[in-house]
Length: 251
Image (cartoon, rainbow, N blue to C red; front, top):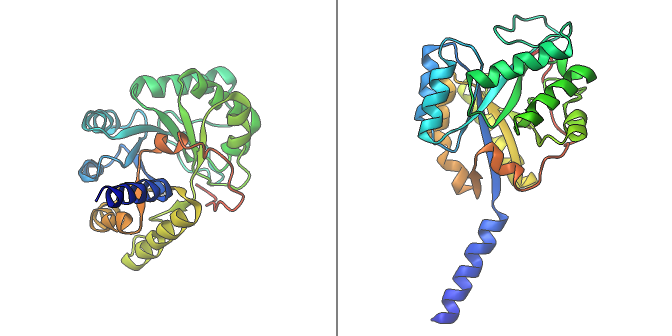
């Protein structure tokens, strides 16, 4: 009996060690009343909130109080020229202006543990602005997740130079909100998480996405995948560049 118990415990430890870890970041939070539905998702989802938005500070505070990990979704200039909203970082800003905006964003959401870029297909390609971003995050002891809106991003190089923990997004869940498209991307999340051992996925607070996740997140455990806070991935020392990371331009 004792021998059987030891075998069971060893198997449990082995399974735990070999389980894949997945972080799902819901970003673009702050403008729509429907964004509040993200607070109905499991608490090991990470919420990335746009600073200085009508609902951002309140939803971030409520999420923080409920145990969600909170990030700041930093608006950065895109190749498309899309409007950034408040707190946006652009290529015509100097060092003082960039750092002021990041300080202001953390003042708006003071309990944020990290940040990722909103759009940024232009700004993340620029060495000086990304250095200033990383210096600011270093001073806040915050990590950075590169949303990978361009394959030419300098975020990883500058994060390493400054000593900021960095992760990269591998999969977007909901660029297409049709059910079959969500299912296709979710299967990719499961497959890549199992292949890599760790994965960062990004989704958005669309009603279709929230409903899909609520119905399908239990499938992760069935596939040996742990849903964890984004900072938990940093603890496993996976802050490295994936040469196969996908990207989406013009965001």
